[in-house]
Image 1: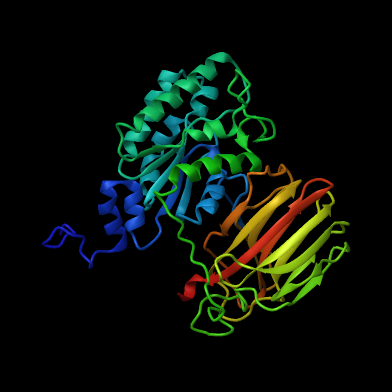
Image 2: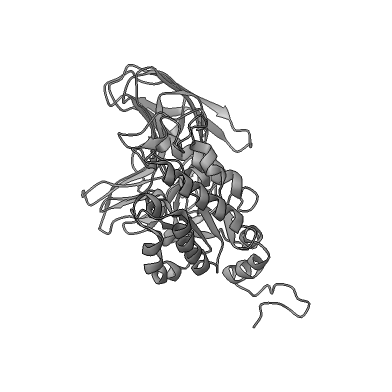
Length: 445
């Protein structure tokens, strides 16, 4: 069956993935937009994209130094991550990817992201022509679906030959867009972090974690380049709560767990569990703002009407933050209704940042514990002790965690929606707007 009716139109009986695939023949972006469901994505290649995810026994997170996480946030969550999405491996060259090609192609997805080539040149000591030959084979093997290629980005200088090889590979890849219908190359990822005054193809100061990888500040810039390239092709699809009744405690037909998702009222708590200066002002009912460390910074809380007309934003005006200072916005108490151990949860919210100094993290996450066991985390922009201060280009957007299951067990000991705001040096400040928090139980759709 072709999937077309007698007039040559897409049949209404066709599944969303089949319809997207057919329309996608006319263009990757059109296919993604035509589908009722958001496209599901995966990553392949080397460590630049392997660093999108962090998975441990107690964590299933997206990280703040992952450029794709920033791009998806800026776009309003344009794609979902397919199970098994992380098919990128630290140190991989084109040969390694070709060896694993059957596994990569076996992942059922709608689009692929690829970062590849740097290890051929810097690790395997290949020329530009040799790297192009391998990369061409990879492009051939991945020609069945939309492929977004992140070219070789600036890193530490070794020698002029490697610079010439990297430039040669990037020029070739960009030109391939005219002969490969499925290929999008994010050429401006290079421009985003390069030191324009250098002759050595190196990154500007403060954007790398070591010699090769983007840190969180660099990921913002590369992510912005990715978002700009894909804007209009892959629109935001975040499922956001739109009225107060979409809450399980109010209406048990809802699978949204927070009792006050549009942030109404002013009876929320202001605490200082770390021993520092407590926040002041108004906090939305059902939530609290906690000064979680013993810093001397101040946080003035207020509620302001959202520009989209859906409830309020919780505003945190933070000033005078000390090194490692942290404020946490979270639901009051623990969520116990509408959820059981083993069920799949996902959190998201609109988080906008301005006027910030020495800010190293603004991270939405789920914190959970079952039967008093290990605390589990599911983070949207996970931070680390090595994070750099974000540049002015970090303005936030719609953050979303992965869809991940709670541990199995008998009883949920603790379950919270949280947003951490952290600072890396004294004199930190930020103006933060938190709006439309969502906590979905996807097992009860």
